[in-house]
Amino acid sequence: MWKMFKHWWSWHSFTPLVFVPQQLEHQGQLVDIRQATLQDAQLLDSIQKQVYAVPPWQLATFYSELANRRRLYLLAQTPTHVIGFIGCDFFERAHITYLAILPHDQHQGWGHLLLQVMIDYCQNFDYPELTLEVDYNNQAAQKLYLQLGFQPIKLLKNYYPMIHHDAIFMSRPLTKE
Picture 1 (cartoon, rainbow, N blue to C red):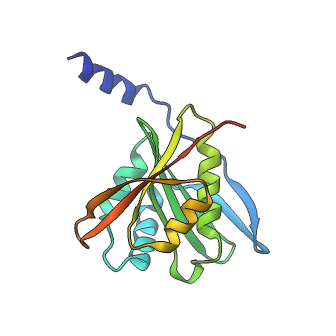
Picture 2: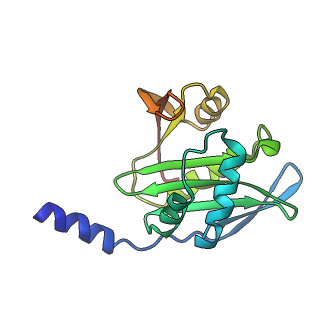
């Protein structure tokens, strides 16, 4: 009973996450980073459908994630178009739930930028580490994560069952500077 109450209380007493919008310069372009809202669910779903042949989430999942006070989704866009988004869960640990960059913007440092913004945000809390899973076959993403201080922890067999792929669980320390 105590465990159920403790879980309920931790959920209801959690202050919703707030991100102050940022305007950054990346490769000579201005990019706005802002917190995604429920009104962005269809946009996030559209992005994932352009990134993945088999989209991992349903539209309803995005609505649920964006309504969850323990989740933070950031959307990156230039004055001319949307770039992508990143999501993070703040429950028992800080955990990246999603990173998607539109295909025509990949391999240009946008994923690095979004991930660094999220790492900086996570350092405002008392979480000792930031974790994520990455597809075993996604070498480019693994390289990005290693560059940002993530280390492989363990292999997760058949983590993505719809596409029969394994994942690598990775972690990096979060230190306040």
